Amino acid sequence: MALFQNATFLKSATSQRDLPRDSRVEVAIAGRSNAGKSSALNALANRRRLAFVSKTPGRTQEINYFQIAEGTYLVDLPGYGYAKVPGEIKQRWQTFLGEFLSTREALAGLVLVMDVRHPLTEIDRVMLDWFAPTGKPVHVLLTKSDKLTRQAALKTLHAVDVFLAQHHPRHSVQLFSSVKRSGLEEAERVIAGWLGITRPAEIKNPRLKGSKTGGETP
Ligand code: GDP
Image (cartoon, rainbow, N blue to C red; front, side):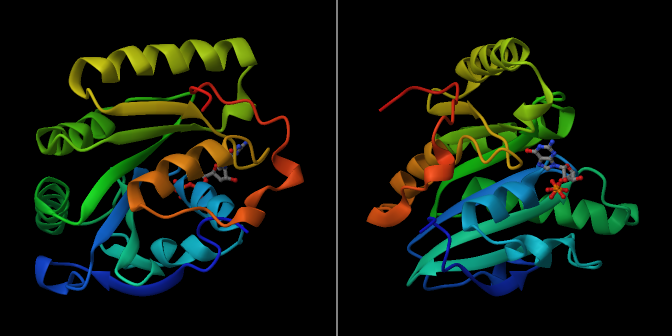
């Protein structure tokens, strides 16, 4: 069973007052539109449509909460960067997002999804800058790794690792592919660790065999 197998959509939030108050621990997942965040979320949930909520028109400026266990949440921060919205709304959304990342106490860590072919875009760096002062850990999923040769993917993995090391002492980065379902275990291990939950024992999925990720082995 996958880590987020039983995740259920709880609510969308557009301002601080909408955020759940019973939250003990949260992990946020963010990524530029089209980076592959929904596919990664769905792969982690072993479902096709967990992340559909964030794709609904009008919902692209909302923080979406999925409950994993009592007081334990996965927070989907919809595709920033390409939101086709008027400047004022965009500004309000960015302020909310910035505030959320820098002040949300329950937030244990940030998963940032990047297309391995286009890592560290300007907006990725803005997100990292908002989050860095918290001193909380960042985990980068370099997804669509199936689109590159192993060698090219490893080169990007190294470059992103070097960049992150300069700003985020608590960082990790890995290769990921939703299509090949590779890198799932590594991502689950990091997220489960942040949430303080143990992955279900039956999580061992034969399809994950041969998954080669660039991160450290346990
Ligand atoms: P989002 O906007 O960040 O949620 O991105 P999506 O998950 O919707 O993915 C954007 C596009 O990239 C879609 O056409 C996906 O099919 C494709 N995609 C996502 N993940 C992968 C992957 O791991 N490998 C490949 N080859 N394509 C992917």
